[in-house]
Image 1: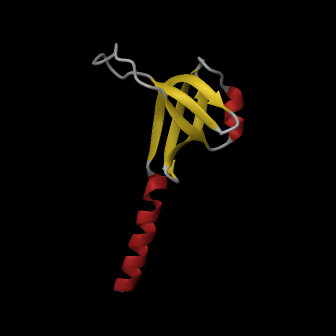
Image 2: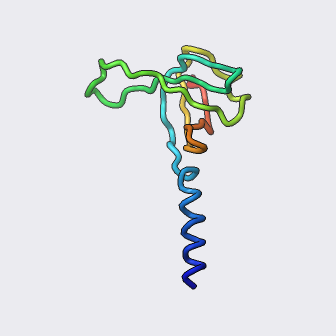
Image 3: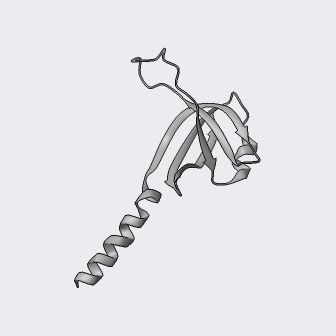
Length: 97
């Protein structure tokens, strides 16, 4: 019974980074690198506290390179990320209209 519990716990801990997903973040695309499969996004500021502070753009891997074809630098986007393999990966990317 203890061995089963330990194996189950180890399996669950191994999947936690994949389960940690951020839903519905918004930002502006600042760069696209199709060769590396990455998109740089400057997140939109939430609220008014520090609204004038300029946040640095973050670079994310993209789950599917086809997602990059729908957006261009300067587009406002909504995106979801997941932590996996030591890097944040965009799993959903939509241009706002």
